[in-house]
Length: 232
Image (cartoon, rainbow, N blue to C red):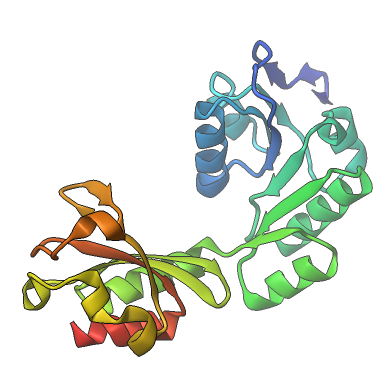
């Protein structure tokens, strides 16, 4: 890959990982994703139009390339079509985001993930066939709001639009009770997967009576979890 008369393709020795992922856009979000994937041992190609951003990650990623992702030919020359997944981490520039996704689709990359800055942006990405639409600010905002609303809610993760997983502290009111006595399914429509006790996972069968610092791991709808946490 060339930019003017300068070669701008940084490459490290081949990774042994079977996962090959392109991250387009190496701002704070994209760089974080690319670093973590690389740390996991994945073969990561980072692409950005900024020489400084690309050079900054050149010693971390398998490859890093300065290129304009709006240009299909530039992505093809970078070898994007040989990768399993493309992550378009650009959200502030709608045109660049959409064209990057469309170019990846034209190159027949098996999976495309993309960050969206708004609901409209997300709808556009969905209409052009993006496989996974990421809205980290919204999702993290919801996560924080649930924990702020009720101190019993320690962690909260959305698995699907109507399926959530949460860690909920039972507190002193329920010390000595059995998990079965909470009647989570009958009263709240929640299923208990187990609990966290002293930093370790304990199955429902092994939990015996609840202790003061126990945190139940439950799965169900967001509203049902909120109803349960509000009763604690």
